[in-house]
Image (cartoon, rainbow, N blue to C red; front, top):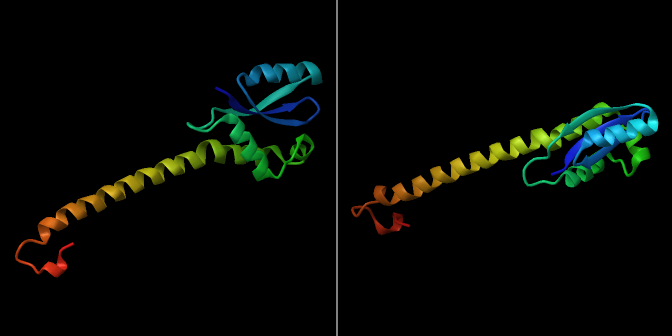
Length: 127
């Protein structure tokens, strides 16, 4: 399983990547540039790959390459990553639960409607 990571190297460049071991990537960048800081990392939500999260984040940020990513502030990148990995999956799960609850209520009304429309009422009201 890959992890989404945002790393700042010693030259101030930001690296948004999907890796099995972000700390090893940070160490490699640190060896090349002097220092490197792991700014943010997270396991992607269930059913979504880390590469998909990285691609979606770069699309939302409008960054088509490493040079374009360097122009975007780190806070903005982290906000997009938090939205993709934490906020939006929770919102989708909450809406899924509400839809299931609503479906259950609708099913209950359909089942009890048969009992409410008994034999004494007109056939035009029956469904």
